[in-house]
Length: 358
Image 1 (tube, rainbow, N blue to C red):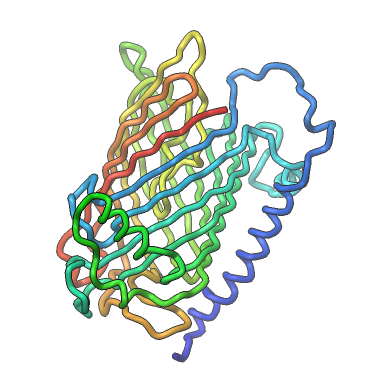
Image 2 (tube, rainbow, N blue to C red):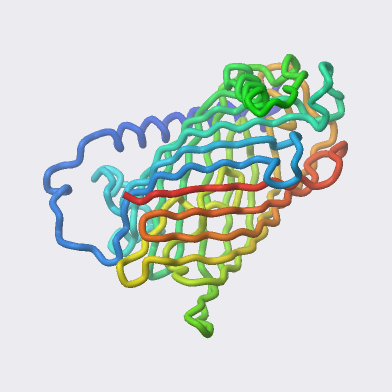
């Protein structure tokens, strides 16, 4: 299959850039910090510890069906604020948009798995107009910089993984269905072929306004913008979020599996004085999409694909986040617009996450 100039740039070029970023960040994070950097300087208020998060996204939480984006799972760890290797701080200090004197730096690693299926999973030969079967298994390296004074957060995430049979989509879905006593999907022989996957995802989130309300309530509004580059997905996105509740300064939002309105995976735990906190939120995110492997098919190999992918897509989401001391739980309900011509209306799915600070 002959590649276009754009595909070559977003595939090979992005792969080299992402590999360099991922390997460099991984090596830097793996090196031990010096004794000087590990010296405690006294209690920090508020406490900003490391956080483990487990996120599950499934269309059973929304439309109750197995179609389109069928399932996603992510396990992630984000370091405590400023517990990053000195090499990362050195790099951050030379970036003009980061003021390290007032910025909390965090580094993280994650393991994600996602499954995509057509609408009718009972067919051994799927409808060629529908989206193909696909599994996506990836490791991620994340860097987050939060400027408390300016109330903004920059996130850079690099995902490296595999799309295709080696990602285990058929194994995960059909064994899960077997455990639940429901029929398995029949068309996995037609899934996307094995292909290394690369994504470089950047996002800036800026809190615009915060207002105090009666009964100790707070409300705020935040805007975000970002982009993704790679052979898996290439897009630009922007959107807005509104929140109302208590202790909104505890974080910028719950963890999610991208593309999504996602926080960086951190939160500030409750204290003895105020152990509880929580808020409701609603937000929108719009994406201009240049490539989506799960609709456009394999980049370097011939495979199934949809004929008329939408260039624009969007999410409407609403949810609830509650934390008690070191534990945070969140639920997000998402409606995603049609992504291709044959798709039968928008998709609904839900996301549940639990985060534990340590």
